[in-house]
Length: 345
Ligand SMILES: [Zn+2]
Image (cartoon, protein in one colour):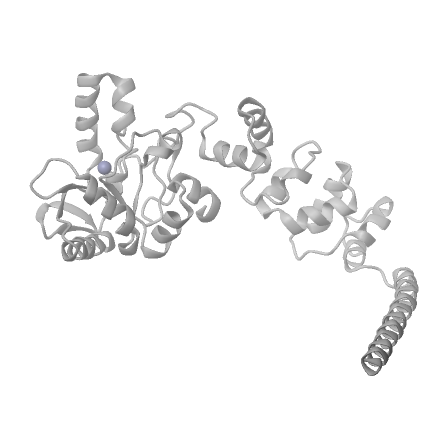
């Protein structure tokens, strides 16, 4: 007993000695480092200051600021930081701007009055020129800034089919088509007929993936068939017009895309029915929900996301994205509109 106590005592003593030594060692070093740094500063100009001095843009009044700003390999860097300094951003803010903002955002920043970007540094999908819209949206819907950024970026602060943009990457498998993005009269060039019936076509990779999905489903006693795949701009025009005549524009817009805005025009979307029926059964829809991503497809329009997509739930509408992206979208449980803004664009 006595022996144990003695050992414990010695151990405690050793710990105290160790901790004290470490403390004094580091605190003395800290002072040393600080002194070294201070002398360095006077003798050694920062890279930014050095570079600035060699350009015609050098401004003596910003000498101290140049010293504090971390150098960036960027064309016209000195010119740009001069502008930021003119706009009253301090060196600390400028360092943050370069650490967190995308280049296109920095360039936009140069043409605006000073903004408080502090709340935005951690929101990677924010766009400098939309800050006013984000704030308005946040105020109106009492939501988080992250949510406001996402919704405004999608276009949801304005009515569907307003502020429509022409899609640039129409031929990419990741293309985003919705009520704010139009394909115009685009036609894919690699359409391939589906084995079920040659009148149904998808782009090559999507067609191959769809065949695999159909076969895999069969093995689990799920029998589905395509009933609509690629649709041309002209075909969609006829379809939409017929629906408008039948139900009126307001209602038709909830289930049918206007020409140029249908995913079916990409050749990457296919609607499926249960074999022998003119609908998809609940059981088969559930199988698709659980398994479609394994073959590269997502259920594009769900019950929960009508406010974002602008469409009623369509458990029969599959959109091809490839296995990796389809799996990621499914796992994250978000719409492709959101996913595109956060991870693709
Ligand atoms: Zn569809």
